Image (cartoon, chains in turn green, cyan):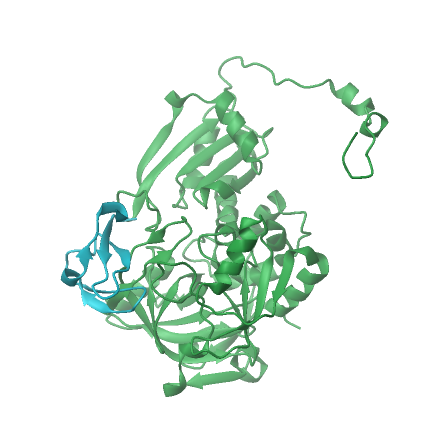
Length: 466
Length: 51
């Protein structure tokens, strides 16, 4: 049986039962779903939450929505075939390797495609039949926040990404595209005066989601990377609208098919974004829907925007790891720091010579988007921000700060002065090789080896040490 | 992100903002709360940073 969202949920409940919550009470998609998530977050809790009785936009209960699924690196590790405890460098390398050694896709017929069990066409296409979540107060409407698929018209390479789609009409959504691969492909069609065919995937195995969030080179298909992360061929099926010209994931929960017409832009937004701020209402392209396909009882995925799962999905981390490893031999680990919502990157290396850290930083910076790169020695755990900033405190002087201006970035960053670019700060917080440097303190190793804590500290019955 | 340009909905007074690179070009906006569509000139500019 092919892996899909359901096989993953079964594994999650088996291996990490404390990280899964089911909400069966009827709930409205307008603010109430995110209200529950906010209450959990206020308690410091970030479980995957399956709501099984969400009302659709036209008021009918009984729909399933899955939120917060990837708000934990442990759950992401589980999604790509690792142990949950391998959420650090093992996870980064797993993602990086998947981009290097892509997997295969296979095409199946409609009879073997769960996502096309129900096909809605023509005047029956009505997004109000779905439980589209309205997340934050100033949002311009209910939003999908999942994966848009399109295909380069010149090379035939598939591209996938996370794109927000705002409900506008029963068969129309708004879009907001940053100038990356999805936008490039849309522009290619529009430059020819043609509409861009698209498919929008509303739920699949989280390994599939992860692949869509990786900043891959243009010539690498997210479909094939998803197959690599899944560890098996990704099953595709011809779309109902475009046939073999646009293949869609056969094991998804639901797929919206349609096109982005040239020369049509309408108001979209505001929307609460990963930055924690609303991006303003703007003029953006639209998607005209032609078909909705789905399972009989789809579990619709939505990323809770601006919260932990929005930036934990560390796909870029793998791509940065791949690029830095190619540039610097001594790479140990890469971390996109949680505090930086994807824009702060910490890199540890076994430095050979002065200059290695800057090469590592420039390789990382080539993915765009990053605003702060800190390079540390390999004695520092980049997944522990306290250690990273200790290194900055004692191994760095501000005189050595490098700033690269007008680097292509996100259009969402509220601090940007330029609409599509920002500045990148590079901090080399490694010990210098060109002059003597003090030695880090430590207890003698031979003493640590003969000290056994239980001989000195006795646990008490309440779990605290005496 | 581009700068922001605050508007107040002429129908329900909800305050929201548009990106300033699209502001001042005669576009039609809509209120996130009441869905009223209105030309920018009808949206009362709010105090910078929301007052």
